[in-house]
Amino acid sequence: MRQLLIIVSFFICFHSLVAQTVNFYYDRGADKLQSKDYEGAIKDFTYVIEKYPDYYEAWHDRAIAWTAQKKYEDALDDYSKAIQINNKYYLAYYNRALLQYSLGKHTESVNDLSKAILIKPEYLPAIEKRGELYFEKNEFEKALIDFTKASDMKTGNFKVYLLMALIFKQKSNIPAALQQVEHALVLNPTDGESNKVKGLLHFGQQKYSDAVKCFNKAVAMTPDDEELFFFRGQALLNNKDYVASISDFSHVIDNKREMRKEAYLYRGIAYYESENYLSAEKDLNKVLQTEKKSFVAYYHRALTLYYLGKDDRAKLDFSEAIKIKPDCDDAYFKRGMLYYKRKKYDLAINDFSKALKYMSKAEYYYFRGAAYYESGKQNEACNDLEKAMKMGYEEARKDFGRLCY
Image (cartoon, rainbow, N blue to C red; front, side, top):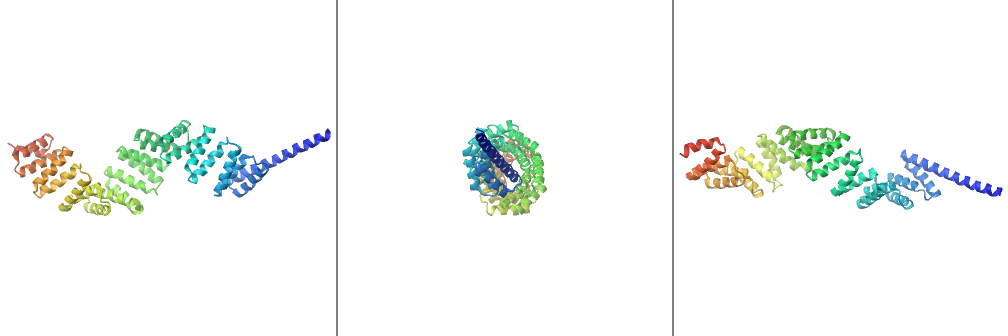
């Protein structure tokens, strides 16, 4: 009996010693993994697995080491083995999901994240990551559910709020989008992307001064983002700060080839608005060399040529603009003025009438009245002058008193 007890005690001590040895190797492997000694970590975890094949944490941690060494198939095999041993091991699902995502396996990644969440419903990293993946695939409603849950859990991840802001922006719910981007900026005030999005939201509300302030912050934080200069240039243009606007568009032209055409267009408009018509014409010419369907380019080059006194070319550009956008009242009016200047009164009347079809303006009535008068149509002229006069057009009052009594 005593001999049997000695044998039993020997086996208990032996297995205890083996277990202690295995745990020693596992702990040492974990330390090596932490210190980025991946080769050493793999050796220790492999020793543990050979002694205890069901040690799922060792399979999982070796997978992390394989991933760090870019041995992705080995890592996937180890994550899968850990899950096979313990199908409730949510960390293995989560980390396998991250690896699947990095390999471009979006569906598999979402599936693993969903399994992790099913096992551990309050596991915030998986909820946040699944929301990001839904967002990337434009599945905004699903993404919003995950982000809302993360928000309810008081996440400290500013990106959750930033992406929620973008979803609400896409839904045209600007107040909600601004609220979310403010949350993002509270968590990370120096994030350039959040300041950029806030600037775009203000721009969409025509709050151009506020937009410029946000873009200024974003540029200071991410000066290599050339889009920021383009967006700020547009905000400055709408804010009538033409010199600064031209500077930003020039920066884009010099540094971002793929946005050059748009930058030439808006710099041309800025030059036009600042009455630098020759520079405006040059920029708009560059746009129209390739963009034959750009109403904005034709219209603004027509205006530029109009003020440069290049009447024939201006008339042609107004006509091209009208072909693209047949309801542009000002294009009809300006072309009508060119006809009026050439004493082609019937053509002028026709254009003024089309302008009035789309917009009732005193100036349009006044000049159509003038064209009627020059054509010998007294009654029609007086009717239009009276309408312009009632709309507060001073010259119409003078001419009506002089010509219609």
